[in-house]
Length: 370
Image (cartoon, rainbow, N blue to C red; front, side, top):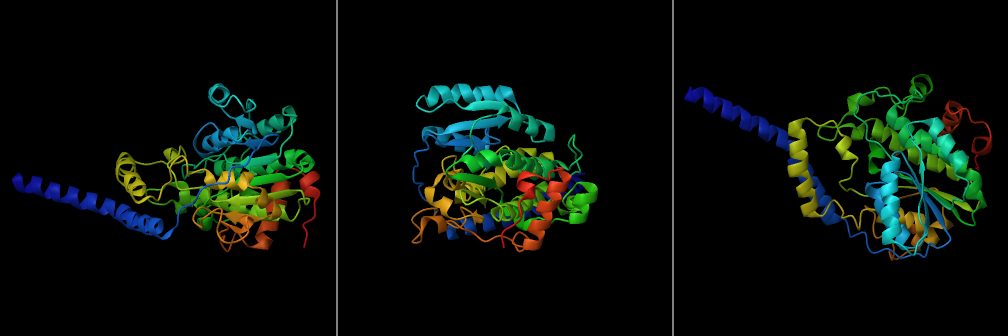
């Protein structure tokens, strides 16, 4: 009996040690990255008085943190939300904490429903100076479809943003300095897009479940595909916008938000993630605080110099965001993947998105500049 118990203990130790290997490797990687990457730096505060900023996904995480800063900077906020109860809670808190700023406009919009996006764009009649596509779902790694028949990450993270941009573009064009900000991710480098799968199966890559990352769920699957689609869209969009409207994509931050809570972890994986990986990442400084985490999307959404360029990709992994020794608009610019830089793929995705959404006017009628 003692020998059997000893063998069981040895097996448990071996199993636990094996399961820790990805975390040890990841800890070394994040530690090296943290030591090798300079600090993001302090932002230049911008008076946003008179500017209307629309942010999706602003009831939690990065979107909420960005909204808090912009309210402090006197912006007029429009916050479409899926859950009106959460939206009302944000409104109540902002009204109390930021009395000098206009009260946020809270309206219902569910990115998992194309009709909901259309309804919002029709019901909201106000101006838009800055449109921030922040909302996202991680997905489970399974092929889940929305009521419109599209794979969940494809629609929520990309296609509904395309539609919202199309519908709000006339108001952005009326702005003296319109700006569209796509909160993508470094995960776009792991993405893959099959135009055949998109057209015939309404998914960016039908094989995405095979790209599930151990301990990270769908981060390398359809989530990465949707983040690649955002960068491709921003680049195609840059060739179609008037001079007074610019578009940029970005990697926001590495920070614990509600997104990873969507990951389909086993009980053991969740324990290891919460009690080993996250503490190590915080210890070495690789994950950012609530103060630092939204800085990149705040900077790209507000800094006046960013209006002088278009179609760029910014990242806190290429700091500092300001005072980098170059013109401000070139600070924080990062490289994108080979797939994201493929102009043929940019155009093919753009045109196919117009077809899938049955759009043939406005943005979808614009020819790309050479």
